[in-house]
Image (cartoon, rainbow, N blue to C red; front, side, top):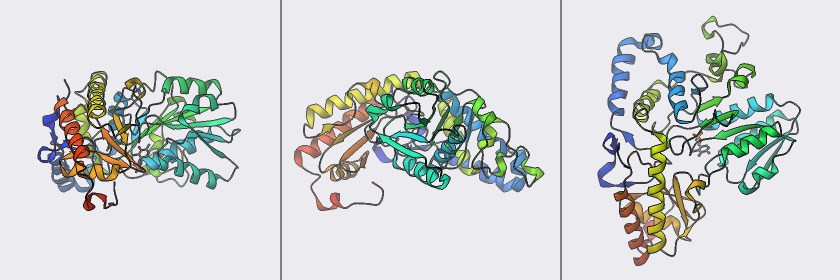
Length: 395
Ligand SMILES: *Cc1c(COP(=O)(O)O)cnc(C)c1O
């Protein structure tokens, strides 16, 4: 049943939280975990924490826990940095394994930062690479023998449209191209099987469905044959074979360890660890079933009661991640009106209102209340008040 883990989360004052796809809510265990690490580890061990409290090993152990949710074998995922950095790192590494090819293929449903990072990297490489951006529907047929790397976000952040990871990876491999999957809206949202489809690289963040908190470290998966071969572009000291030898020459560490860069964020890792302890009790296949039930119910209610809103997500749940969006000219104001009434989703330009479903804590009751509130706001045009049209910095 959905919402099985709801009591483990702090959901402020009766709100319906449908924005866990942007920032997961606080697990109730996190404040105590932060306090324990600050007081009992940092406070009593100071620098000794790196060895005695296991801080140095945590980027890899957290990586293994995330790996279980995305079908990655132990020792193939490491955490650190931000997702933008991990996109850059994955792409730079993948390109170095494809010295004869010049095309990076992506789609216009990708999250802008992924494309910006790619563009910046290609410009600094200055080897006449091309960033080829096609529509999501055309990706499969556009993968050709000239592609060095296919770099895609599996679940579209605006519409929830989901790429077929197995089919695209297989096609890319048939053309001897490598694939990078951005799992920002997949990890903890849909079952992912990186090993099963022999994906080359994957990256993602941990503050969305994984509930690791604002600023939580990102993660990177590198298939072990690539990890052993690749010379990291971000050759930080903590990815060195022997960081504390302080050699002037860089020698990459073993496998995935070489994708670490610098000093890990210990307090953020403490929060993420507390959240992963919840994930360790959850079953992704079961959650996916619940997520589909929640989103299908929401779509049915909204289409019945708020006919001015146009569904922009795929109708077929198999083609959709764990979020749903609707288009409406005054979407921003509608979302502000909803938030004012305690239903929290978000808005994405130009006109989309977006709702994320996280069955760890969302229930059918949440869906009913959200759809009813939305219908009321639409029928009464309650959104059309000056304060709801005021744009804030984060939408
Ligand atoms: C959320 C998101 C990001 C954010 O990157 P940060 O470096 O964590 O700010 C990047 N890519 C995708 C696909 C996202 O959904």
